[in-house]
Amino acid sequence: EIVMTQSPATLSVSPGERATLSCRASQSISSSLAWYHQKPGQAPRLLIYGASTRATGIPARFSGSASGTEFTLTISSLQSEDFAVYYCQHYHSWPPTFGQGTKVEIK
Amino acid sequence: EVQLLESGGGLVQPGGSLRLSCAASGFTFPTYALSWVRLPPGQGLEWVSAISAGGDSTFYADSVKGRFTISRDNSKNTLYLQMNILRAEDTAVYYCAKAGSLTQRGLLDYWGQGTLVTVSS
Image 1: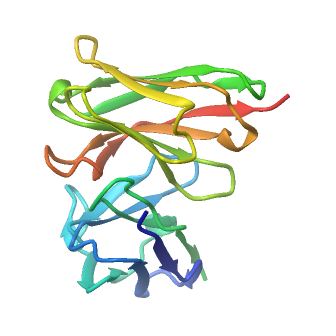
Image 2: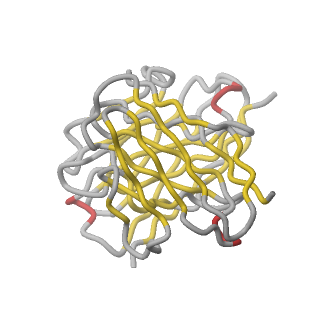
């Protein structure tokens, strides 16, 4: 099983600031990496797939990048609706595991 | 518009059984793989199980293998999860989710709102 490790666990950011979230895979997953966010009481929402492709309807302030087994989600200017828990997930093989999540909170 | 609506959650005693359903609409149901993912209280997302478009291939997390069974009825556009020998650690909100493409079956592009399963005596 591929282990996904996210950092940090919590990120405190002021509205309008930039947020950078990291995710590491325990072995090569090519670009089979997705990012989701989830707000309390809501379903997760797909943000990025293929490590860097924005899903339908996702604003351009969200971007993803990759370097080997290290993946990054950047939110260029945080809006109020962006405060949530963010998960990375690989879908390279079964089981498609998630990272433990990064909570982005208001500073 | 893609819609996924879970049902069947509730309170069950340890060792008991429960069957979850997920009614789908807004896409060609028989074409896509589907998954169940759960969110235990205070924890992160955990993928539970997946089934291929035709239902001939199934996949399970080690934590539920031998206890849970995923199935689908393509004539009814409905996904199921039969959960047996339930444990306290199975307590979670259970989501059904649709595969994002025909080939990348673990990528999940649409999710339901979830149904709560509580295992407690």
